[in-house]
Image (cartoon, rainbow, N blue to C red; front, side, top):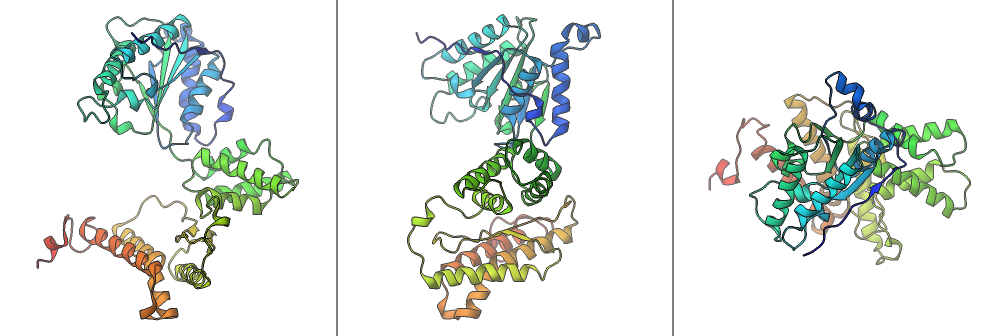
Length: 406
């Protein structure tokens, strides 16, 4: 019989809430839990008990694991860390046995914290397709977790269970109910102020020419990184530091930060300097395309300022010029929404076909305009046939033949 793994306690994580920035409302929620853990008897006298579980969900890189460590670090409690994949193996009974060992160990150090990362690996819905085998064993592990968290013989010892997942939608409903995970918190993408706070945290040990320049540069990066996660923001500053060292500079400057930003979500590809030589005509076509996109976008309302350019020296280059989004766009009327989609379709996709026809002739087109035209056509087809956002009304047409018979 395979012995279940013993997952030891990490007595201190070395992480506090000061290491997490960008979403203060989440910190406030979790700080309340820490207060209850630290002063359990005081709160029990008031009829308040600590939540049995906290489930953190959201996109990768938003700081779910960091938050779990911060809770343990602030509370000063033993921290038991495991991954959802640690429990399931080919041997029958191993998953349930490992779950038992984990909770028994945590209770022996009570009060303590259990953190299960990627909990969807063991906590996904029962009765679904058994992809890759091991479904029965995984379900046995899930049932044991359900029993340990809120079963008939659950101990009264204080053990807080923290789970983290990117896939809340596939978790078993029994795992999500109150009494097991009492708090379900979404850790999403940070706002502009949140991004600035995150950048300041990770810039603590970085060298800038002055505090004033540091503040100005970090604010600019925060404005340019609307859909970035905390992990990506941290990587931008680290990459900027690497570039600074490579250039033998004393301080991180604007050029290094923008280059790091380009590498993070722009067109940079490691090793592209040694890639196949790009023909001059292809470089010219790529340059025309990007110039046309930039010029045409200025003719529409609220033009977006470009901040990441396409590298025309890469043969795999795609239309990767990135733009700042208009801030505060939360609500749009139907007409505004349709117009924004149409405007996005024209300047960013179909313009490649127009500029190639204008500069090189209809008989001298290449794959650049072909792919762009296909993308524009698909977007228009989706808008007309599937969204119900046009004069055809609220209808969904699976095929074009449903709308226009042969």
